Amino acid sequence: MSNPCQYHPDQPAQWFCERCQIHLCHGCTVERDRGGLHSGEKLHLCAKCNLPVEWLGIASVVQPFWRRLHRIFLYPFGLQPLILMVVLAIASVISGQMGLIGLLGAILIWGVRVKYSYEALKYSARGDLRPPPINLHTISDDFNQVFKQFAVFFGIGLAFLLISAKLGPIFGIAFLIFVLLFLPAIFILLVTTNSVGAALNPLLFVQLAFRIGWGYLLMYFFLILLYIAPGTLNFYIVQYLPQALHEFLVSIGLSYYSIVFYHLMGYVLLQYSDAIGYEVDFADFHDPQQTGPVAAANAAEQLMVQIDPMVKEGRLEEAVQTIGQAITAERVDAAEIREPYYKLLKAAGRTHEMANEGQLLLEPLVKAARKAEACQIYLDCTAVDKTFEVPATILLKVGSWLNETRQHQEAIGAYNRLIKSDPQSPLVPKAYFQAAQVLHKGLQQSPKAQKILQGLIKKFPDHDIVPYAQDFLRQMKGAAG
Image 1: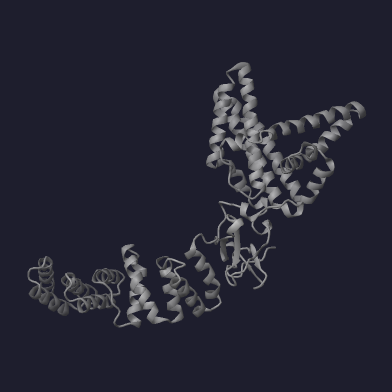
Image 2 (image 1 turned 90 degrees about the vertical axis):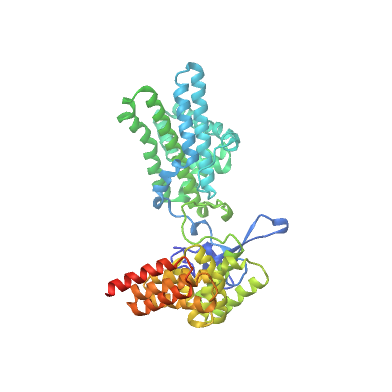
């Protein structure tokens, strides 16, 4: 049972800080390059004390394979394996019509399928749960793995013949059943040791199976299902289709089940790597389906990771100082952290700094049409700073958004602030007009709205908005009459 993260209890911990004596998920660590001779290597630091943390091992990251079966069976439907399956299926249809040359093509197709499946096993075993890419390295490099698999089968067959000849067919069949039971362990050893001799060594493959334990038997059960599935599909459905379509679908099925077969073995090796003694590096782990907090990618995100423990532990002043120092030292772009910094200042009761950040934050929020956030920041800042200055364009927008959310009195306050703070602004007539609309429709203060409109028409007789003001005034008077 893995420990939960100190700051994200719903996430399993992947790291442990010896100094703080706390468990952390990946998102609660700060990732930095080691630099120097170790450039490119990643160092993970505790966000609380900024010291290196200890990885808890692959068991803290991976799910048991029986909880991941749906993803394992969907694995070949990634773009890369899907392209390969279709290409191999088309090649199978073509080679089936080419006689002896087609036979050679079929052998090559089998070899490519096995080679890619081996790559899926190796990728999965080292923790990279993405399907391998299709390139020359994947398909052609280390192609002797295919020949080594053939050598394994040849060795098993030769041993069967020798045992049957020396001891009789019953012992030969018993030997064959024994080997088939440990065949997944043999394949795993072939990939991890790259040695046919090690793969065929009973002391090694039996020991490997027993180290995995009952999980090996469960894996074996699913592998048997995978083995018989293509034949069952062919027997009941595919054989009744046209010949070309039959060959195409059989090839797709063989490729699909081969890739799943090897991916499952690789994942089991990954899951039981600690028990087997197979070393997995966290830097190699990649699960595209993993959810939850992830490690910070840039300076701003890393800074937020660093202050997250401070916020959760109520050390708000320390968090404010940490961000302030980072901005002053230009270690981070202030624009990237302005919004969380504002929220932190608000929580810490630093009203003066909060209002300063709010001024800078309002404009990008208004440009992005983030209505709720912009209105809330405006209301927060004006509540603590009566002289809070905002450009007329922003005040006009905020006023209309406040009115949309039925905060009519606050909308009037925004329009009044615009008129008083910038009486020469060309937006003042529009602010008068919108204020009159709010008074009439929202606050049911029609007499006051009429006075504002009359003052607008008198003070700005040549403004474009005057005809609209006159029309609105006539409507109010007509409704009153």
